[in-house]
Length: 86
Image (cartoon, rainbow, N blue to C red; front, side):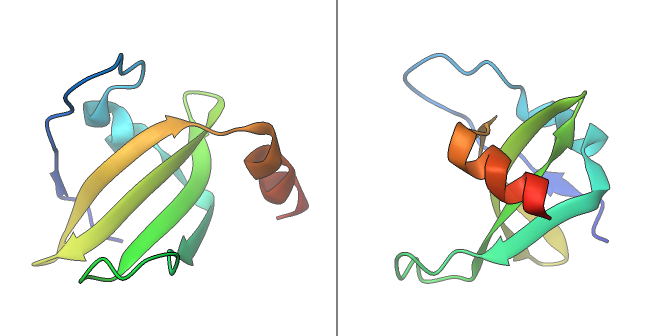
């Protein structure tokens, strides 16, 4: 698993989760799948996993053996049901 993270600056809105906390994500078990909703010009992935006891959704891509975190937020009810089946 990659261990180096590139953090992005988030503008607008209130970010309740700190990207710096992503290193504390419990990667096992984490559900990871490709995000094929749009052509982003890069391969993006979405992860559903536990961070400090709460289920979060993380969008990320891999660049130069680093994980580039694109977004992180609390999982919604639909995503929680998907994770529960996992």
